[in-house]
Image 1 (cartoon, rainbow, N blue to C red):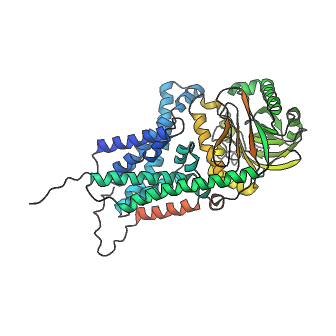
Image 2: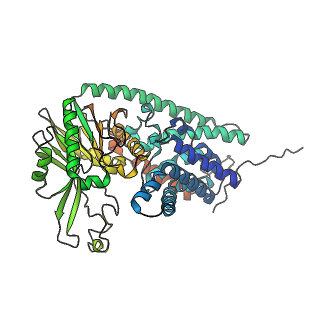
Image 3: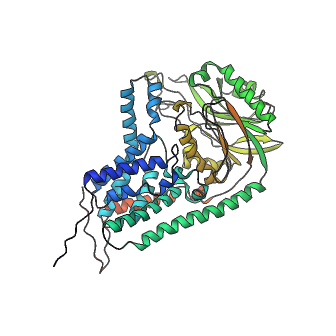
Length: 527
């Protein structure tokens, strides 16, 4: 008597899309803002099950739906920002939100397509899924940068791998656990023996991650305690977006008052926010003009400003979004100009090559990118310390930060930003969580000065030493240690992930050779 078996996979479309949407929601719940971080170990499982046996086209669509759900839930604050600043009706802003989130969801769609293509050609699904995750985080362009590693920003023992492979390696360790759990689900559904190597790999990766984290935290803490220390004061003036431009005197008053308070509480130097000295100053006389601000601080300082330079073309002038450092007497001794500018908001693409574009779009920003990653200098108690400055969202760009640190070899990393655009939503906390790994990647203290929060000090293992609340006028004073370190990630950067991505793309177009004596599964239909 012949026994008839029922094929469970691929799942029917409605169930498969439901699983994909569930993965998107679980991802969001694990992400900063909600911070249900244990879900990071299971968030991918429904999507893995949904993609089992699907065609490349269906896998792409499943990935896109999961990515759309991740982004709509995670970036819902875009609706309020667009409504406030665009002037368009709420339904139009919602349409823009869906378009942006749909594009960003393409990251997971790309991941799904790679998985569908490679598994259809006989490559094993477990390593393919993990490699596709790494490739999607590395290669797919997004408007708002994010990565899975941020889900464990509150759990330092799980994030220490960042000094070896950056955020992708931290995320990949979490995904490997998801793959192992998905294998347990799939083997039960398919009524087959569980793949012991897959489960063992997941358990081993989790054990190695925790063990490495515990050892490195102990080592780095010991190194920090042996390094020279100082107290930093971080100033959060909480000026409104229009108020910053129309009430320069009030902004300066708040910064100076809070700086004096920080000095009395023991601060050795202070960090202000992006464009905190908002009144533009001219290049090349900016140092003399800014001294009118810096000489009144009474402490060594790092603060943001706007520097104007005349140019002989259609633009007439260009602006630099700059961070400058000054000593206790107010002398300017360092300058960094932001390199990664916001498209349209700060510059027009090809505007420097074709300046006439600014005549056609007069309201576009005329900022020019910086050309040097040289450090700022902070002179504390007669000792000069190099500091790498990052402005605005440069702090969520691991590769750029890597370039800056390798060039400057700083003893501290600071970020000056202004997140008031996003309102009192989850966005400032998401931005902050995404920055914390910069401290781990380079084993340095990370100081973040913002206009409206979250301002913070993060230690070299990613723990938050102190932070402000959002949309409050306040300052904090916290200890830092002057540290230098050279990590594996600083040396290798993302090259391992680039090679892994290249190998997976090869697998997506090259059928796997079957060894003699091994029965190959029937390939999945292609699109």
